[in-house]
Structures are given as structure tokens and as C-alpha cells.
Amino acid sequence: MGDVKDNDEKIEEAILEEDRKKPVSKDMNIQYILKLHPESSVILMSIGMGCITCFAAEFESLAEACAVHGLDPDDVTEYLNGELGLLPVEE
Image 1 (cartoon, rainbow, N blue to C red):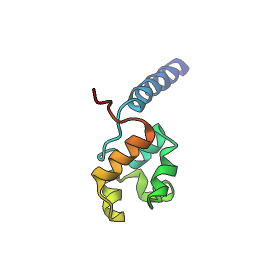
Image 2 (cartoon, rainbow, N blue to C red; image 1 turned 180 degrees about the horizontal axis):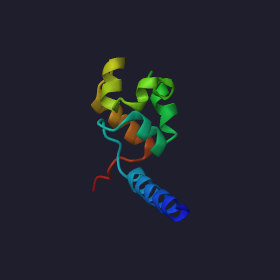
Image 3 (spheres, rainbow, N blue to C red; image 1 turned 120 degrees about the vertical axis):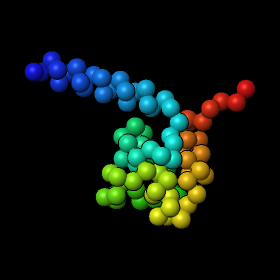
Image 4 (cartoon, rainbow, N blue to C red; image 1 turned 90 degrees about the vertical axis):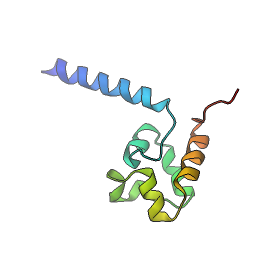
């Protein structure tokens, strides 16, 4: 049974590692963003989103949280990706 659990944990970590390389989208769950990028908590709080302490973060997308805070989800997504170094490089 331990082998199955270890294998599941390895698969989950591989998925997380792959997702860490992708830009954050406004449809992503707040809690998942925080799991991928713990430093995003400071970034979100700096723009007035106390998402790391809110119960709704487990269920809300970034876009939904932006609506609650009166922020444009596209602007927040772009800002967050820029701060996290996840914006695509233009050639």
C-alpha cells in the first residue's frame, strides 16, 4: 500500500512542478495558485486581496476573488504573472 501512496505523491509533485512553469490564469483556484507559488500571497495582499486568509480561497477562482475586491481580473493576472516571472517572453 505504501508503494501506491509514494507513487501518487510522485505523480502529484510532477504535475505541480509542470504547473509551476505555466502562467497563472484568472480561472485558477486561489488556493491552487498559493500552493504553486507561495510567494503570490504577498503579491496578492499588496494589491488589497487578503486571499490567503479567506475561507473562500479554497473555492474561488482568481477572477471571482477580483470581482469581490472590485479589481480587473485581467490586470491582476498580468500583474501576478509579471511579479512571478511567468509572462511569456516576446521575441
